[in-house]
Length: 188
Image (cartoon, rainbow, N blue to C red; front, side, top):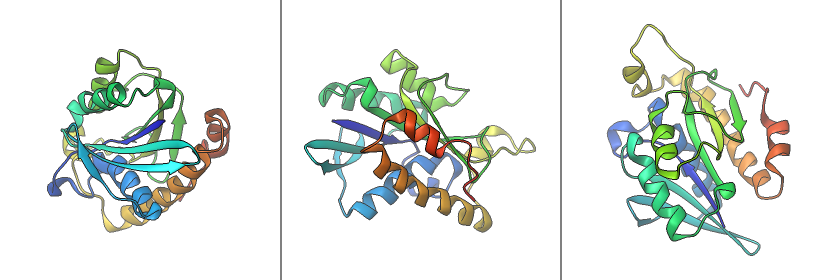
């Protein structure tokens, strides 16, 4: 069993904000698979059966800085091995239009990742960082909670569509091979 988590903030006011790209990716995958969400443990989740494996796609419904609490409940309840956990989140240090896969690492100041690390007691979980760029002219909080412009959404849509292909590859490839295939490419 695998758990794939897209980070974001619940509520319509956060739709299309930079901090919600994880939700956007999960919504795209769920839509393309033709499956639907259920609710449990403060999370919206969908289950995709692939061969004899269950893939849980999760959007925590607590605010970003508490998302680790929701993830911990899913990990415990479904007995998810940390090696089978994949977190998808926004990344200020990655250019919009790019994505980066990592096997582990620090939170880099991302409050959602800090809370995951606190609740899971590890930094050793796989992640996909979706670039949102950074505008140093605006406070970080205002920037990540700001909405994408129309032009930015066009670039972001291309990356979100690529993540569906990445999801399909994730089901059949090692994570190291995924990293080799998807890292260091400009996706715009």
